[in-house]
Amino acid sequence: MRTKTQVHELIQQVKEALGRAGEGSSDFDLNPDVKLPPNRKLRPAGVLMPIVLAESGPRLILTKRSSALKHHPGQIAFPGGKVEDSDSGVIAAALREADEEIGLPPRSVRVLGDLAPHETVTSFLVTPVVALVEQPFQPVPEPGEVAEVFSVPLDHVLNTKNFVIQGRRWRGQRRYYYTIPYGPYYIWGASARMLHALASRMV
Image (tube, rainbow, N blue to C red; front, side, top):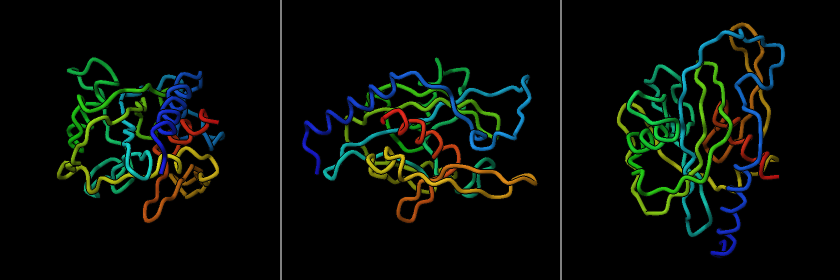
């Protein structure tokens, strides 16, 4: 169990990591042979990386997407989605989506910062927003979109040694990507790549 001082130091480390300069990432980082068209259009989106302070130590909230969704069904993901006209930007979109998808009120979190955007194979430019959950809340999965809400130890996903590169056939070619297994959960693809970007800045 971490002491309050250790938790405070960890949060400060995360904030410092977010303040370090870094390039954006993409689903194609481990596939240098993929040539992306320079005039491609990407839709802005925001996802929230919510950190909760549990008795066992800080944990990161994740979701398992519904198997009925069109994009990334059944995958592990952060709450989030595309920027709507009513949003003031990617941070507002991430907070709104977290409220809608898992019942996390924006007033309950403190935004610590964000990472450089991540480009997905589905043509989204996703900005990961890291936030500290400062008030207790009961997760409420949005029916039809979120199958499960769970958490993993923050230490686990901030350790680059826990990441594994794997591959599979995709559109006729071998595609490689990061994974970070935890218990019964298989975190991979965009979520794992964004976590790797954060973990790399913590070193």
